Length: 181
Image (cartoon, rainbow, N blue to C red; front, side):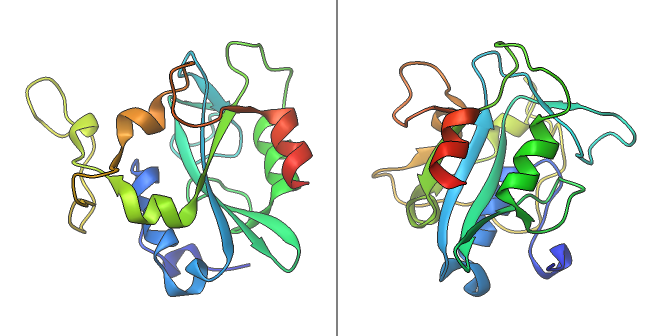
C-alpha cells in the first residue's frame, strides 16, 4: 500500500488530483488510464467514500480516478475512497458499486481516457467550482490552475458529458470488468 500523503490532493477536486498523479514520476511510467465515473442522471452512488462521515453511499455528479497497470494487475488510485490506496480493480469495483442492486438511473458508467492525453490536454479554470456570483463553492487547490494551449483542450464539460454526444466511449460496469479483470 502507498501513502496518499505522498501525492498532491485537494478535497473536491478529483480531476485535478488525478492530473497531479498522471504527471508524478512514480506513476507516469506505468500503463495508466484515467477513469471518469458518472451516469446520465449525474447521480452516482459510491460506497466507502470520505466526503460525508458515516454516510453510505455518497452520491457524486462525477468522479475521476486513475486506473494503473502494475505487475500484470490493474489498480485504482482514488483519493476519496476509504479502501486501500491503491486498491485492486476487482476489490474497488465490488466494494464501491456492489453494495446493493443499482437502478439503471444510478448505475455507474465509465469513460477511459489515456493518462498521457489527460496529462497533456486537461484544462481546468475551476469555473464549475464557483456559484452564480463567482464565489467558491469549495476552496481551490494550492497549486495553479491547470491550463494548456487552446488546441485540443480537454475541458470539464466534456469530462462530465455522459450523453450520446460525448467524444469518448461510455462503458457500462460489466463491460469495464470484462476489459480489465
